[in-house]
Structure formats: C-alpha cells, structure tokens
Length: 433
Image (cartoon, rainbow, N blue to C red):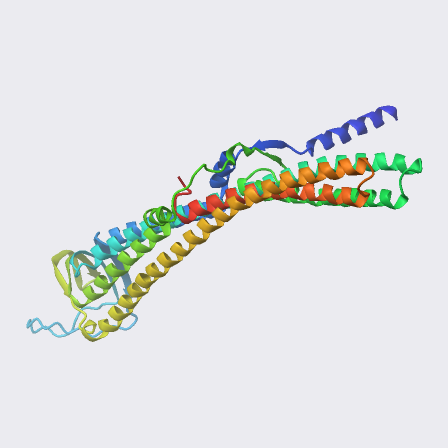
C-alpha cells in the first residue's frame, strides 16, 4: 500500500510538472518576427499572390496554340440510301451499317486586335497590386503586434506598481492594527486602511487578469503555446528624440504607402481593360491545321488527310454591341481614379490625426511626470503630518491612492506615446522599415 501511494504521488507530481507554465522574456523585435512568421493574414496574402501569378501565366498561355482531338464510332441500324453521283451509271450502292472517324485540329493565334497582349499586361499589373496589398497588410500586422506588446507591458507594469503599493498598504494595516490594539487609534481609521488594502487587492486581481489575457492574445498571434507566460523587455520601447515635420510625413506617405501604389496599378489595369474591350471590334486571324481519318467498311477509307490554312473570324455584332461594354470599362476606370483621390485625402487626414495624437501623447507624459513629482511630495508631507498627528488617516490614504494613480498614469502615457509614434509611421508608410 505504501509503495502504491509513493507511485501515485510520483505520477501526480509528474503530471503537475507537465502542466507547468513556460516563462519567456520577449523583446519587441522577437515579437514582430514571430508575428510576421505566423500571421494567418499574411499566409492568406501569399496564397493570393500565387493566384495572381497563376492568372498571369494563364494570360500568357493564350499565345500558345489550341489543339483538340475527337473521334466517333457510328452504328447505322437502318440501311442508308447512297447514290454516288460519279457518272458510272451503276445503280444501287454499297451496304453500309457502321462508320469510324477521327479528327485533330490545331490553331495558332496570329492577330486578335491586341487582346492577348492587353490581357497579359493587365494580369501583371494586378499581380503587382496584390503584392503591394500584402506589403500594406504587413504594416498592419506589425502595428497590431506593437500595440499588443504595449498592452502586455502596461499590464506587467501595473502588476509591479500595484504589488508595491499593496505591500505598503498591508504594512500600514499591520502598524495601525497595533496602534488600535493599544488604544492609540480609532477603530474607524483602521477599517479605512483595511478597506483600502482590500481595494488594492482587487485592483491587483484585475491587473493580473489583464496580464494573462494579454499573454494569451500575443501567444496566439505569435504561434506560441497558449499558456506561455511572457515577460516584456522594455529595451525596444524608447521614444525618438526628434521627429520629422508634418509635411515630411505627408511626402513619405505619398512615396511609400503601398495602398496608393496598389491603386495606381489597378488604375493602369483598368485602362488596359478598356483597350482590350475596344479590340473586340477587330477580326481575329489564326493559323490553322488539321488531320482527318475515316473508315466506312465496304465503302470508304480516308487516311493522311492533312490540311493547313489561315482562319479569319469577325464578329459583326461587336460593331453595335461593344459600345456598352466600353462604357462600363471606362466607368470602372473612372471609379478607380476617383478612389485614388479619396484615398489620398484620407491618408492626409490620417497623417494629421496621427501627428497630432503623438504630440499630445508627448505633452501628456510631461504632465503626468510632473504629477508624479507632485503626488510624491504630497504623500511625503501628508505622511509627515500624519506621523505628527496633524493629518487624518483618510488624508494619508487619499495621498497614497493619488501617488499610485499618478505612477500608473505616467507608465501608461509613455506606452501610449510609443503606440502613437508607430501609428504615425504606419500612416506615413514607413513602419515596415
């Protein structure tokens, strides 16, 4: 029985160790690399690029010859009437009840108004647009992981600050409890301190919950085990010492935004599509060739019937049906052109919003840092007054809460400012760099 208990205990401990959470220190650079590697959105974009490349190949293959082979075996249940107009004067005809024939046809396009060439050019332009869309999404993925890293950092810092405050609060409750036991402190003051300590514990629980959710979110984004505990490394979270002017960021956006370039390629493709539709009013010319073999027992055999020639096809209806197609294509090209202007206006607005948001975030850091100094000094003075019985317990507790809040605010302000700066870089199209 004793050995069984030892065995069960060993199995239990082994099981518990297998469920132990792995801890990992994570830098911003590592987070970005893992996120880009495992992003399902980017993998989906890779599939779209392959599809666009296949579309280009399909357009190029239209230059190759078409070929088809067909064959049939026919059984004739009723004797056909055959009258050969050969002038031989012999009446009647052969008895025919079956036939076999096969054909091989091939054609090589020589001229079709340029539709094949336009199709290839259009497909290549659309392929470039899809690649640029993927690059644009790459910037969005980078900004998303940066925001998630900042949320993780904020949650981690909140835990550290709240834990520090909770330790001070618990020590304060212990000191006040001794005073209350000796009749030197009112019971109500002790209860206030205990209530604040309980509230701080609740705040810590919320902070730890936020931290765990931030870890799960990042683990999913980076393809890591879901329960991995991430410890943020703040070495890569420094703000720049100086930034460019608003006009420079707008210029960067016009030169580097991938969505602008992608729309430009789509506009060129739409213009080429108009030319391709107009080309339908021209005839198509092809080099044709074929082979025919047939066997009708007791009547006819044909072998090595090879033919070669030039085929011309002209759809006369395109003269009056093509106009509406051209109008539709031109309307689509115009829509894309207007979309370019709308996109340009939106980007300028994004740049202005991101630029102002960053400037405001920097100002907030300065204000909150000043508030930390003020709250620290206020707490020091209030604590000194309290020790000399010149301030109430409530005033001391309020000063402590104000100090904790100011520390949390300055931490969050610095983190939010880092996000604001990277959002500005993304709006300018230079975050990928």
